[in-house]
Structures are given as C-alpha cells and as structure tokens.
Image 1 (tube, rainbow, N blue to C red):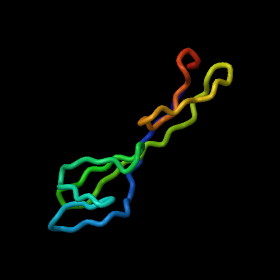
Image 2: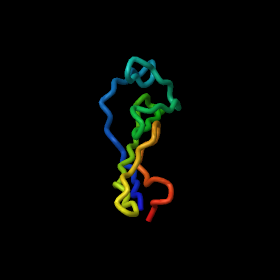
Image 3: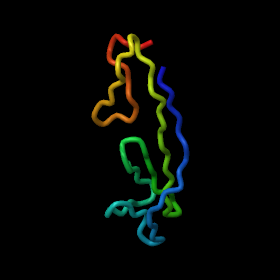
Image 4: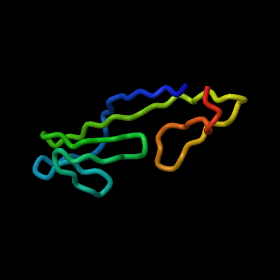
Length: 85
C-alpha cells in the first residue's frame, strides 16, 4: 500500500510585488502553476506569494520483497506490476 499525503510549505523564493513570484530564474504571474521538483507543486497567489505543496510517499510493501520502482517523472515509488499487495 502506498501512503501519500501533502503538506503546505514555506518556500524560500523571492517575490516582487510588481512582477509576481520568482523561482529558479523564472518569474510567474499570479495564477501560474509550476513545479519545484517532481514532488513539489506551487502556484503564484494573487498577492505575489508562492503557495507550495509537497507529496511525501511511504515506501510500498511489495510481494516477495520485490523492490519498489520510481519511474521517470513520478513522485512516489510503486511496486512492479503483479507484485502489489
């Protein structure tokens, strides 16, 4: 079973009241959504401050102790097909 939950984060990014939210060399307008990494998603609020949420995943228990796999672009590891409990 995979456990996934989200938490709100205080993100250390700069915000310019006239320009929107600034992260990693890019300025985002209010309403714009962006990823900080594959498990952290942000939206630039109307007050030009980012609101971010991060997913924290538990390690799944797979049949026959098969190792969990983290696929490209996914946040949480999963059991290989056929080895889900």
